[in-house]
Length: 408
DNA sequence: AACCCGTCCAACCGCGAGACC
DNA sequence: CGGTCTCGCGGTTGGACGGGT
Image 1 (cartoon, chains in turn brown, orange, red):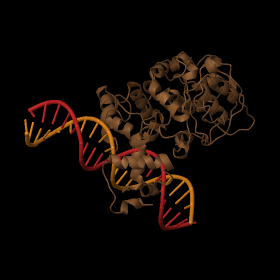
Image 2: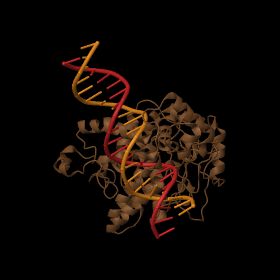
Image 3: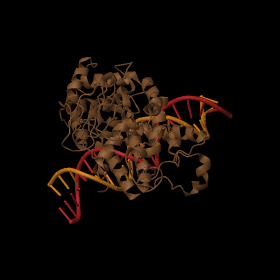
């Protein structure tokens, strides 16, 4: 390990990028892709290190970047995600389409922190300042990577009262599976995080990882203004990720029931090998799911309202029990989603497909849900997929959560 | 006009992790 | 199995900018 080799090289430019440099980099990457970043500057004729080129591309030149100030919805989402994820800016950024981790980090440090403090909330713990002031001197200095806010909330909820952080959260776990009391305590907290992941990933209508095209936004509010809530709930799973050491059935049930409204329930298999393709990525109501690897599964078409969602087969649906009220859960989100950025949504679709989704997509969706799901690691999007790499957001986080709860 | 100061943000730095040899 | 390379992440820095004096 050690320092990046490029750091030793001489005669490399540093500092702000000139328009000419931007143009060179942009032309090179759009034409050839980045491949190995260390070779990019040489091939592009830039006096920069590969690291610098990568950063410039990710933070500035990438075509899917959203420009302009953050909306209130985006800020709220950042705060919520930070409460759960801590300073994992890249993962927070993955929930905010077109935004970079750097951008979000800057926003947090320069703006959101202040706002939270003005509201009497500790930005590190998301608790009222009055609660945390006594312990303020014990907060590790920034730079201590082993502590602070970067990993604080996986072993314990951000506050004693989950609802204080996620007001709409209603722990569904107790009614879902018959567990012992001790298990319930762990499971309810675990459910909270699983729920938070599902919820946070459906929380934005433009739920699209910022730096990847391997995860497509499964949203249709853009295309179907009168769509019901279920259509607005994209759910993301890394097709490469699994949920190690967790009961897959329970996990799947929780994830899916938390993510889908009762009105949209149809059945699908516990093994969601469904992956986004250029064709299905923009399908209304279609959700990209993967929760495991079991074999005896099939997806079936949904006859749900407004385009159909899919849900894991569940013997213990919390919806059927009537305990978990979807409408309460999603009401805030729905408002957010419907207020969400239409231009960006359209941009994504156009960007990926070159067209705006038509009604034929609905037919495609049905076909897909009937089992004609094509497995693809990278869907072809006119070469774009070759230089946009998938994040490991879910794989890492589920593993972290799983590990964390194993320790409880 | 000149200076100071605070804010914002692009870019850099150092490190961990994984791939590869 | 250890060394090297590459990538990606999070923390930090420094310059541009704007407002106040």
